[in-house]
Amino acid sequence: MGDTPHINGSLFGSTMTPSREICAIGGGKGGTGKTFLSAGLGIALAKMGKRVILVDADLGCANLHTALGLPYPEETLSDFMKEKVRRLSDVIVETGIEHLRLISGAQDFLEIANPRYKEKMRLIRQVQGLDVDYIILDLGAGTSFTILDFFLSAANGLLAVVPEPGSIENVYRFIKSAYFRKFKKIARDPEMRELITQAMDRKNTLGLRTPYDLVAYIQTINADLGRRLMESLATLRPKLVVNQVRTKDDIALGFSMRSSCSKYFGIDVEYLGYIESDDTVRVAARRKRPLLLDYPYCSAARCIERIAQNLVKNEQVNFELMPKP
Amino acid sequence: MPIAQNLYRLLDVAETATPHEIRQAYELARRTYGGESLATYSLFGAEDRQAVMAQIEEAYRVLSDPDRRRSYDARLAASGSSPGAPTSPAGVPAKTETGRPEPPREVSLEPEITVIPDVITGRDLQQWREARRMSLQTIANLTRINITYLQYLEEDKHAKLPHTVFIRSYLLQYAKALKLDADRLLTSYLKGMGSRTEA
Image (cartoon, rainbow over the protein chains, first blue to last red):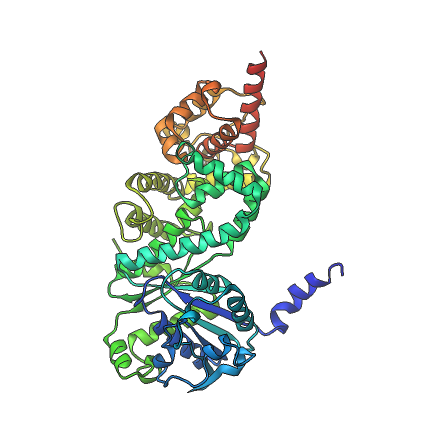
């Protein structure tokens, strides 16, 4: 084989294989706009000419179809989970919006909200196999293993937060849970376990206060394990979307949260965008109509379009937007 | 906090940041860590915030001054390209680059590259710290190591310190707080410890 995989990867990998981007939208707390953002982002990307599939992964509490102005479809994720159909692509439905299709979530039975590991992996594998440009997973509230695993399976993990203490706390809790889910996968190594146990025993005398302190400490005493841990955690790069912003201070919250996560967890969080508080959102929701179709020029719709552009171009919110003290 | 080694990283700016961007980043940091803020209250206690703020003030002090920043950049480049080498021509103090002498206070605050001998003791640590006008409490805040242990390190009271594994970690963090070559400081101190134990 020699150098061949490398050459393929660097010269042709990015141009010849279709780029399939998976975005999972979570955030811990309910009501922060996960479904709203999923639908909006799906439409915005489709408008840009990208082929998009929205997946309602809020197992048990699915309502992404409503955000798109659709009735509950006949084929849903439930048919796939119950193995009525073999392939995930069999439950894709058209949305009436060009380039945008939907895999609607299961509403019907309780066990689906907590699928067994095998079922979950089957779903994740097939999601990864869908032939489109963008796959958007609308995750439910909370930090269950199912939600965390969906989140971690996506290259782009988006977190919706509103400028309120409860929502911010939950986003941090979500990041912490995802962080330790990754951490534990590496920490199964008995040698690592021993180190962690030792460090936790002496947590205070060592001055370990944050998860990053622990990783940095492990690095000083076992460079190899430390490096593996760092490499694994470096792949956790959540993208923040601050919803319902009313002031410049609300916008600045995204920058502050990005900085806090870097210092506390030692991970890079990106500030993907914010959505201005806009009464039109409620008007559209009551009419069960997608905001970006019926009110494309309102401020919230424009914010979502900017988020879609940032996602495609891999950019973040411009620092110039910082309010003056 | 261990992440603090790089002043740019501390301020969340790129190494190419303009003075205006550095100023903005500093203002954001003050807004974030200067008092209790929505973004920090659930992650950091008051003490943690103060420790972060102390590091940020120091980062801003260096990066907001063109001369100090140049000198820091040179040291950063030197440490990045050859981690083992404590000195480098690029690390020559900023005053010769600008052509104008700086007041002595500045020189002692921003000490020149320290050459770490092969064998060192706690007394050396203390001298380097004092040359930087840093109190033991400041080091304790920066490294989050219990101040008593730091004192034992400087007084060479090794028997009172925990296991060598922890001493190593303390020394690495101590070196980073003083912006000294951590690996070399560790090796030299451990050598010093070894020779005295055998004696």
